[in-house]
Image (cartoon, rainbow, N blue to C red; front, top):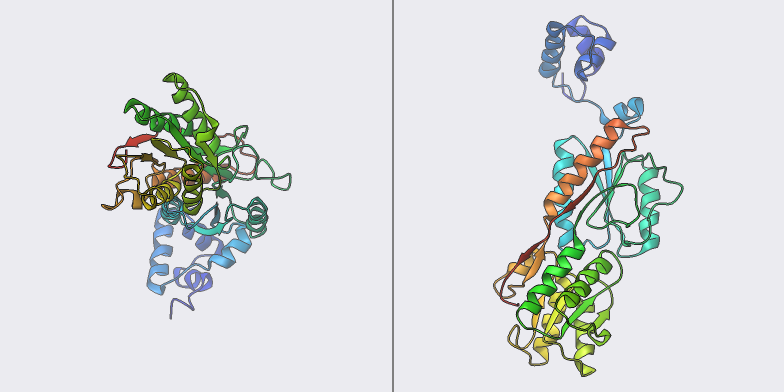
Length: 333
């Protein structure tokens, strides 16, 4: 008999027990003698039995899948997070449905509705905004959701994030301690940018440096935006001696714009990013940056989500984890 053809009925017949006993034995439930369980499992192995996951889901109303929503799959930071999510989910017997909102709030909400419609057992998401909750009243508070990388400030849900304000302070302080003034901020006000900007402002204040809005330029979180914003700053005649970019992609764009205009990095302009994506350590880049434990963040988010799933429905206890950032000093600053 092939694995494809083997059924619970066949196992029950060979083992001399009822269908219900086979089901309890295969699913590790109580009410089955150890000797009977071993006999059932032995028959199942000899027959090459494979459970029908779809049929099981129809009976148990479980899909053994979770959703993952990220804002930019092209940013190397988010595939690192996704890798942690996928590995942890697979080890727990879950599959992952990945959605890319592409920094569009409408898409983000549509994907939440899509995943809920697919009956995923929970959602992990890196939300676009740190000021707006991306879940509307169609998603009950009891539905398992864990934010990762960023979180709305007033949320009561679980999350795993870095201390973004502390990271912004560390980056700016490193530049100011080296005597680099003025320090520019190239970033956005979406995602975690406002918190990193807070850290930038705090470092200026701590060092007695006056805030100058000429050295703050805001766009989106992509490399092209960093290139454009820093180029505009230079063309406007506002030349900083250092730049803190909100993420590594924007920092790479700033580096390109500086070098195209004949500036040396770091001799003329020092540059620091945020995230420590794989490109940052390349020999030709050597970007000084703030490191996030991206892979571990993904794994932690799954652990929290599945703990919530196991206690649903109605499980309301939130776990809110804030990790410490780490300054990684390389050649650019």
